[in-house]
Length: 280
Image (tube, rainbow, N blue to C red; front, side, top):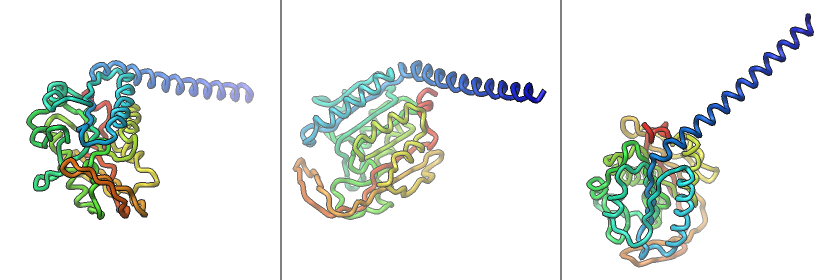
């Protein structure tokens, strides 16, 4: 009788283990099927800034091509803007876009703050609000855009958390008036690609933000900004010296300067925003 009970108990445990494994497999298949089905409905814009101002333009294009290849494997329709295009070309293709990615210079409009895109003809925050018609619940991704995550290449001193926050809000807020629901900006090499890999695993913006903060970064804030949107900012302080490259009126300047605290990772979004948010 004791042996029989032991046998039945083990049999029951084996059954439960198989049931759990089957449920995990079913969940994974459901997730994959879901991605396959809505991936055909997603559209992405990839844009690189003005070629006359970026000395490593081809490197930026090569990076964007890696992103394009990744997105296309997810059945996302991708439109690229690298060379010889104008803002109105982008506007025409951007209608109902779910993922908008930009790599290029940021713009400080001085009295108006940071915002827009540095193309052959500069695009302002007002241009974005007036012209872009993104899909509801879309996401904006910035790779190495001065001011986009707080710091700029021209900063010689620690700008402070307040200024970093002002720049991020100034840059992100116009997009929320065009249909966007999430904004993520990062200055680390390959940061947007890392974001997308986690994003397509259905991780939330908050999870991805925290994953981006390695031992080299410190979380400055993650707090409510307005209504359901949070703002998260992470910084780094390497010490020593760095090579600073800056542009002013089309003139490039390179110099060695003391390293200062920089703000390099930021998001503005509902922290629970995920890829499922794009298909609501």
